[in-house]
Image (tube, rainbow, N blue to C red; front, side, top):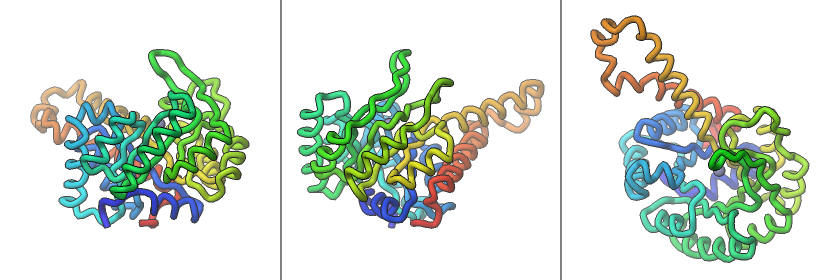
Length: 293
Ligand SMILES: [Zn+2]
């Protein structure tokens, strides 16, 4: 199966009451960890790069080639979509060009008319190449330049209009936030999610900022129509906690560290990568997409 666009397996998740994970990658090792987890759990997945991560990794062409070649060399059998997370218009077009199989066009910062207009253009170009499309209405809260926003609930009319552009799945603000959740967070607005899903019956909704929302709330949201959940911060925290613990364990044992050649990055990063794989597997279980490949 391997590399595919995402619309079929995301719709299958929507139709059958579970969600697939959209897991952000940052490098070679993360990509391997996500793929190992997906294969172990027999779960379809999207491996996604933000614009910033793609830049860090050397560009979209590098990311596409890395993911596609790892899927082949690792003998991955589950469906994997190569997805752009929160792409500007130009980035979406570039990803379609270099072989991403799924893209998110994020025009949520634009006036709604322009967001819809651009989404329509992206859908035409993407669908001509068999690429699935996610778009966003409302905004997803989170920290930007030190200011923590709560995000703007997606107006029902905007959600309906966006679905009519022909997109395949819809990201909608329902009180979710990117990055760690603040102490005073009031939770997901599940009543608003219900209004949204009633306006676009059967249409897959994407939950961003999935890391840090209590599992019961995520599962409630999945019951109401969320079919893709994005995970980024959770894997980052798992990786950094495991790597820090590994380094600390040798604080008082320099000699042992040197004798075991733990300065070799393949050894130094091993615990961190295992932690990423564990975090991804655990999320797949919570989303209910194990054995759905
Ligand atoms: Zn997001």
